[in-house]
Amino acid sequence: DDDEGNAAAASIFSHDVVDERLRQIKGSSCRVGFDLDKATGIAECNQDNLRCTLQTVSPTDLEELSASDAEFDFVLVDAPCSSSGVLRRRPSQRWLMNKGDTLRNLPDLQFDIIQKAASFVKTNGTLVYATCSLLEEENENVLRSFEKSEVFTNGGFVPCPFSADVDDISRH
Image (cartoon, rainbow, N blue to C red; front, side, top):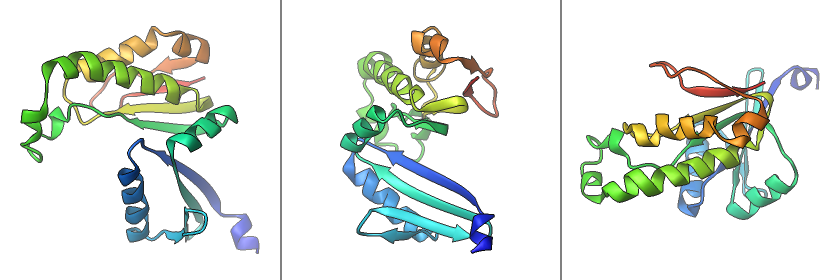
């Protein structure tokens, strides 16, 4: 009908390598008003002039998306991290932190993830990198490495300066 033709539409794809987190996303989407089609696994919400779909993407689905050259207006990387920024909420995390992992392995993984995520950003789209870490090694240093990479240079990305409000990278 005419009202649906005028509605704004948004499609959200969510990916995690941990299946349980993908199940949690589906559960959370239902609690905030999305209707889940159990046959397709796609959640949908229609409110006012907005139609939004949410689809979780498994590692296999992600490979298929990569092969299809899919691109998105906005890509958010919520990277796995040391969780140093949430120690108050999760005090036990302090005992799980290992300096070698934090300063060597996690930044390498985070860099790999942002490189892969960059391939999904449309020209003039936005790539945002986020962690719950307070460590420079997991935040500024990862983005500085990304800014020096071929993916960044050849992809037409433009850095936005670090600020208290937002840290993002736009592609132009």
